[in-house]
Image (tube, rainbow, N blue to C red; front, top):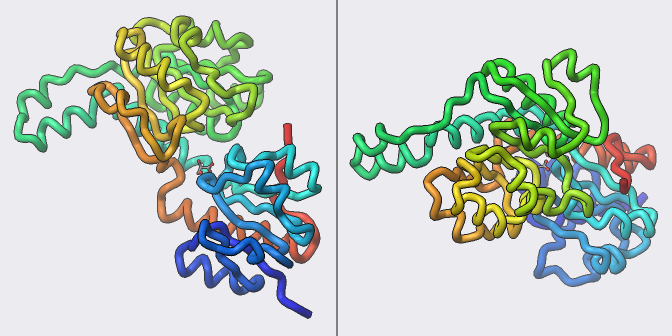
Amino acid sequence: MPRPVIVVARQLPPLFMDAIASLGEVRVFDATAPAQSLEGASVWLGSAVDALTADRIASFPDSIGLIANIGVGTDNIDLNAAAKRRLQISNTPVVTEDTADLAMALLLATCRRLSASERLLREGDFAAGAGQQGIRVHGKTLGIVGFGAIGQAVARRASGFAMRVIYHGPRPRPEAEAVTGASFCEQLAQLLAEADIVSLHCPLTDATRHLFDAGTFAQMKAGAVLINTGRGALVDESALVDALAGNQLGGAGLDVFEFEPEVTPALKRFDNVTLLPHIGSATGECRADMAMRALANISAFLEQGRPLDGVTAA
Ligand code: DGY
């Protein structure tokens, strides 16, 4: 029996490459690889930084049956184009707690101006660092947009910080409310009117692209803080810059960017903005879990014809 061919979108850490090699023949299909590298392959393995457009998917040979994504978000893949080709898609829904930790860290860092204070201290100006006045966290209302696994994990953490938590999503989640103490806002506008801090945890789709634009910012409380560990394009960054410049917002904590890996230069001007390079899942443990889960998906697909974590177009 010939070994199945697994195409990886880029070189991955050696341990991971070795583990994939235990499942089949591995070919690296990076920007320099000839198109025929895909011929005869059964699986394509990539991550959020590897865009699979409709054209790219159309160019896949018929042999490919699974797109295995390392990461929970699949907005890098044109899901409708994949469905037309009857390609299965899997993700790695094992990033929940690490991403929620980072969202909470970003919330605290932004409200308490950790980046600015630390920068001033490192520059030798202890007094100026000590003089930074942040925004109190406890007792404030946190509005969570998107109340899936990660949004709920953030709610659990926020209640430990004595915050009131409200959320908006497609439907109420009574079972999660019982655990987190969060309450449902049917309308986003209601959440925006009440929240002191808004944290984004919804997937990026055509419906949620630029969910936060000038109109949305205008509905937020004056001085509210925006936290985004979801996807950059949920936010219109040019409108965000205007909202910060006009002091409509009191700060922003961003782990993801509209034009990633580019960061809108104007965002770097604000002292009340914390910028991180998409590190929600960047713990050694979480990255290992993601790698193992991607392998388990590939293995299940090769053995039983279906991955464990199948994703379908909405
Ligand atoms: C995810 O799992 O989607 C993270 O954002 C890493 O891409």
